[in-house]
Image 1 (cartoon, rainbow, N blue to C red):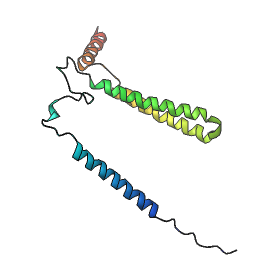
Image 2: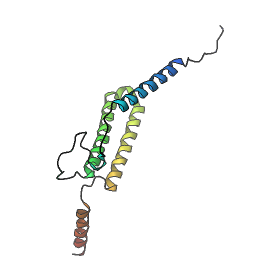
Image 3: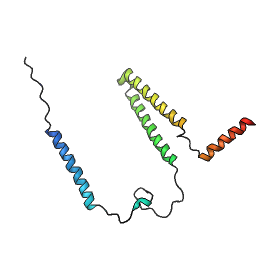
Length: 142
């Protein structure tokens, strides 16, 4: 039996795909430039309102902690989905999958501990934190 050296795969499909992507992206950018709306004023001073024009003044502002906790929720919600998919495939992945999910949970617990210890999950204002320090100090000396 005679063995022949393996021939490399042809590159023309990759080149064709790359050219199609470049043409498509260039066409989309060019059309958006030609057909796009022109801004007559600078929107830098206005707050972003989900693409809608702002009306009136805003009576209050959301704290950044609200968005920060929303991001933490998304991250830990995805962790839950990974654990659920692991639980569904529990018998198929065996001990290797068990060790991997334990490592994943340990890393996520370390992240949660870091967030907790650094105060990222604390919603109190600076004034409330200082008030708590004063109250603890007064209790200690009473």
